[in-house]
Length: 520
Image: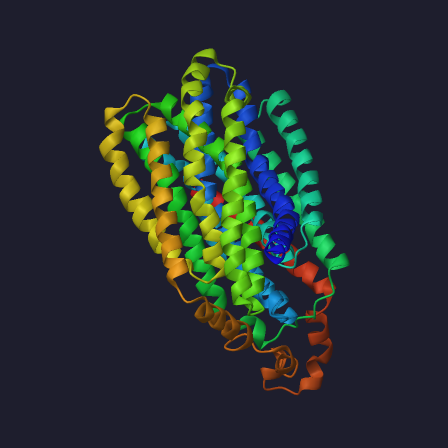
């Protein structure tokens, strides 16, 4: 009896120390993106619906591509690095981290060409110059900030997998303060509107990325060094099988919650007011869900480390207790949301007519949030167990198929269309959660632990002593090895690591300018 009580308090202590700063980190990231909604809504005047809709469409594009890709990459780092860290394979922690950074650099180039042409695509679907110009300018400016945004997201997950959570939180706070100051100057005083919002956000991402990069280079060199070797550029199977399904999960959720609403509210009913209300509801839901996202990351780290250490019983108990504890805290958050819903609405706009419509929708929203966010808690455990493919299929079936069909059938019969869309989203998420938990706890957890142990010791992840004798990249050239000794030393130096990032960043900006002039 006393042992169970002691274990419960120990688990609460560990989850609190890990999940509290992680949740605040996610909240800080969300506020950094959604802060522009508050400033735009308060200064737009009569065009509040058009301005908010244009900003929301721009954020839809960023969420579908930039956020979903960086979330998939960072989730991959969280899963693989936490499992390797729990198994004691510390060299693999850096190996996975560097692999994901290389993959991020390769993904930058197609995304840049897509972002600069978003304005024309939006006009093709909405036939509105105001919306297309606003959304196009937002995504075009964000091109310059995607490398830094993806870098700090991945680096934060890299640090979190080793239970380092407070230093990233401090750096995000500094970036958020600078973002708020820049938003205030560029939007409220310089009247730059959406362009000012995007510029402030990009500058703040570079500030955060620079701080985190400096921290890793100066204060986090306790892990074994990873050379530029064959191990770094080969054996991508483990990395890809975690990145792709996690990336698809985020894309499915975003496509259902944003694109379906855009088609129904703007294309079918041509109601910008309802779409603006729905965009605010999604923004508020996103801010409240950030606690759940942070807690889910902490749960992934906790369960992943226990499974990596092959302690199956503790991992299963920790998963069950973690979900129950998260639901309890989420209930407390939703009760507070119902008490202060008017204050939340007043943050986004001062238009009286718009506020009256918003009050009705926001009063019922916390109940939907409580039902909907269960899927995020389950996702953390499913990711830690390596069941991303199952989770992706369930989300596609319930959110994209069931939810989309229900939207098109039922939304036409109700006046509060935004609220109906949000309610269907909550029901779809709840059904996906129940199905995923049923599948998870019917599986043999010993088999799951064996698969994780195989991934962290075999296949492309060789144990540490064998890695040190592997040939490096330059030794495979048919030339005498001594000629390349100095060059290889330079390739593995810290100075060149910095130069690599600078060169990739400059090349990305150059590509962006070339594509932009080609389109013009």
